[in-house]
Image (cartoon, rainbow, N blue to C red):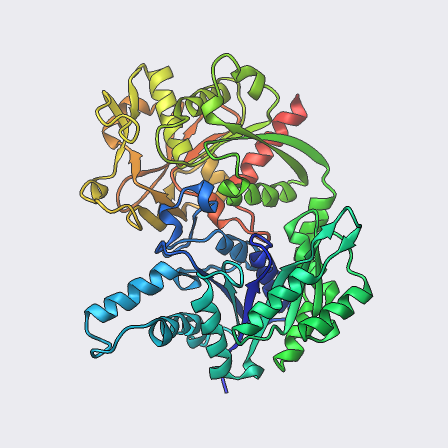
Length: 538
């Protein structure tokens, strides 16, 4: 008998129902009962990872400590569980096929014809078992991306069927997340799409054990009974997932619905302790009852899609709760920021974040916004490209290097204050070749960053190719504009600050990747605190 239990989460009817949030919420409830839980995501696209995907295609690319470029759902997993994920937690079809083809080229299949079954499905199952084989977890939750019935998802669904066969029903469980649409013309919730979705799943040889129903309206008892009958599950296994104000309410809604109770009964497990959700509830109490209100500007190039900056937005919620402050985020497209509208768009902000990004589009708008924040004492946080633009802004407007730029934007610029890292110059392939993962940083004592962290050495996650060009250190940095964090191995600049200012910090790394509900990131907390102080003085 397997010592690790496996839960599979599939989706039906439509995409973007929130399988990741349901998986993370269930994991949170199980974790609160002292089970060791982790979550993995299997994505059906043929990209090896989302690192080369445009944010408009797939939202943000999340980065783990070990340098994996992953699906944004891994961010939800970490924020909910307060534990790190890794490359093993995110697998794509591209990665599966790449691995199988490499094995075939090495002759590992001994001349056999390589086929979807068994070779692709065996590779998928090996990846599904990888975390469980470590012996570190009681329960592994596996989210299957896409929608049941999609061609792309078929090998994963077949692999789940085989896993159930291999491990036995007492060690496996399938949760099917589906949509119950509301027809306003007739005032009815309709169950037929869910019935068809469950039928499609059954045609693949899998019976759902639990149906989680996304809905805008309360499910009646009659409707739940109908779903149980037609979807071949017990009545208590029909779980309502109604729309909520914040994703952090979902674990409590799932607790009310008894999702974790049904799961544990089905897997023949007993709770190791009563739910310990006091810190989570305290966080939600602060979110629901803020004492203050501030407005933060988020300057970026992909602001039309909220998922493009998902981790930044969630980090602001965490830091806002810590400061008992509600935050309204004003999304500002950097391409449309101009000198003639700058004051109008920025004058009512309490703080400004300039977000990461790639390429030259919208760069001048970011530089103008940073200049405004620096001159007008608006608390500022520049992340990755935002930090680089802060260096360019100071070089141009204070130091007098009017043609200062990044070689990413102008390859032959006169003053390349931001340049391609030496280790990147020979690299041709774009996928998985940036400076990725966790790197150390030594903080300069008594700087804003050191005060925020209350440490002298930190490690943060990176995702970039370009860095500050140390050849310009003596020209650019002075008693006002300083380096406050340096990588001890390479000497590369990690953090810059403007001293003559309430709070002005730019970081080469991505602090948003390490902020969680129970451990908000120190820089976001300090930034929001400074923004709140500006607001209270106004």
